[in-house]
Length: 360
Image (cartoon, rainbow, N blue to C red; front, top):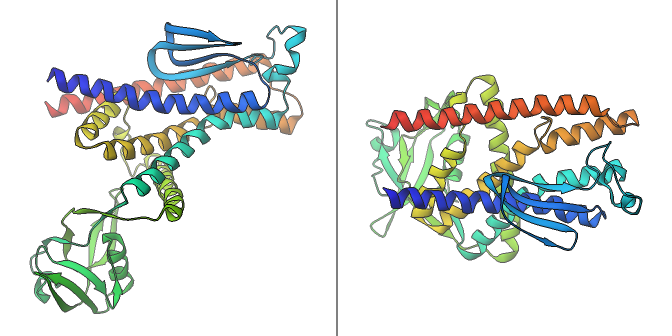
């Protein structure tokens, strides 16, 4: 139990540490390119554990590993700046330059997720859910036609299939028309005619939908399909976009009440997921890291004061008005943003603890 807890802790620190570093590195690199002075680069918040000054920047690891920050010269409008540093102050840069520095953090997390997927596709191949049949619905179309558990479906109406998703899509597109299914069973190729039936099922968001089905479930067999290096870039971009799109849809569904807000997780949930995936394989941990990186990017783009999205919103208002928001209004907005963020974190912690208690 202690070993498991320690593994979970280490896995969480590694995952969060890498993702926070990538995020802050994005801010840091673009700030340097825009000739803004970086005073401090910190992984974590709170008291400093260790730190070292290299050149004009102090690099620090702090006690609370739930975030990080890059402190730039002239972040505040009323900050005192030496004459020789005026040209290197953040507040003195153009609005597009400041927006680029702010947006660099979330974009770095998206790019990092993309790189993970590319390396996974190149090094391991594309993990896909095979078309091997698991359980069958009693008296369902497939069962009646003679399809059995363990059969590997290879074609629908003459179109070759290797992924469960593309097989399901072809069956749905038949709109109830009888389909010809080719499959492998004991090294033999067999052909069956199956007429899909309309059934009410739940989608990934728990919504009830009607869909044409043949009454089979997946065996959950995962196979890897080799991917040429040049196609890995395309597939990496597609995988990143799919996760991003699904995350956005999930957030919309939460606001619509389709998905319970109780599904929102915090650091404890991340620790559990990181620990479990690390025990399975490094491949699973890498994919989880890509997913969390995309979620982190999206969270930071929320137009909440204190987050990157809030700062971008303020800069957009400044660009439209032609002058920055007053310090007093900015401080008030950031206070409100901090309260919102603390409330969200408290709610996420509450959900995490509730899940732990309910499992006991």
